[in-house]
Length: 435
Image (tube, rainbow, N blue to C red; front, side, top):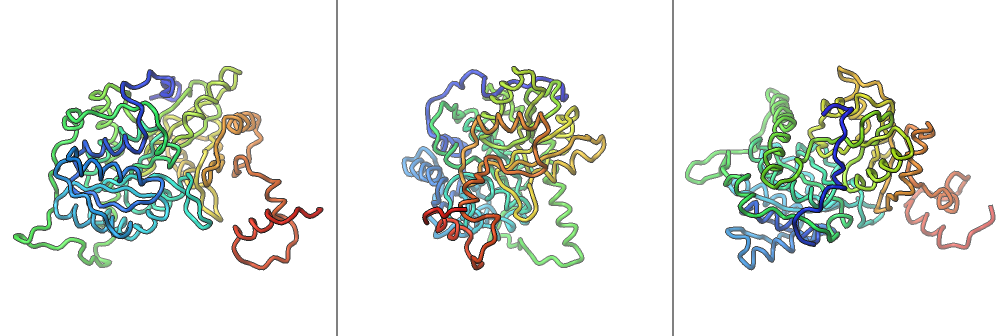
């Protein structure tokens, strides 16, 4: 799609023919229709409802021929996924936040072994301090683990991405992570068209494993690889992941025709015709952002938006096409690299520098950390500031400077080093002293 084309407002499309259902339940039903054979599970909010629903579907027989296994930890869940997948089973699990970090070693192993496991991440902030609400710091922390990463903008997307994830994983022998904003999507009840079994069966063929551990034909997987071949192993893994940039759009088009909905894209533009300032975002903020863009366009502001669905592999060429006409690109991120800046923005800058280069100025805005709402009011102010050239290269949306001042930030302090969170909370509980 050329950067001057008008993309349909997905939020303004007719409601899908479906039923009102919680996002987690809809994802569980979709996963069940993908016919997983092994589901290791360990509960952690806000993903628990997904595996609870899969457990119930297994118990009632609606999910047939599936081994649902309660494990002792998230590390155990991914380890069992590795064993089950290596033994020739279609395998799935779900997690969030600290649970994903606990899996980290096994995530790298799954990718290195080329096992087509599908994992749902119900995005949640990573502690400390403890926080159970949404941001995307958990999945971004695993961006180099070798997993494809797909981000859902709404619960319909979250459902549609799972059959695509299984098909893509099994064709490329690369594990796939489907990320959906915790609570914002997982616990939201809305009208969702869960794909029928016949449609999923038409799209996703029975699992045919590429490698199988069989006592009758012994072999080793995960063998030691020394300096003489390790670079080449990584090179091949990179090449496989890059193939997803070609295969994902093809599969999404096929799936879209089967379900009668617009295909999910690697990245999608919204109201880019004549847009000089474009906002890039991932996940559930897109609906609110597009509403604000509509208001701004009605007021004559030349702004647009880009929805980034696929973060790994990074769709550099697609983004260059979408942003070809932009003068300013503002990336709204729900995670950041402490001590550096944004996570998505540096990759976008590198992508835009490749020929044909896009000479847009790039800005990072950190928003929605730890579940802080990203409101229309805040986004309206951001749009106005961006158009007027008042946005810093790196900033935090809705930063409560009064709260920082009450906690003593920026003033000389004799506070000893220690927990920032505990010191902040103790200051807030104490009577306010005159400045």
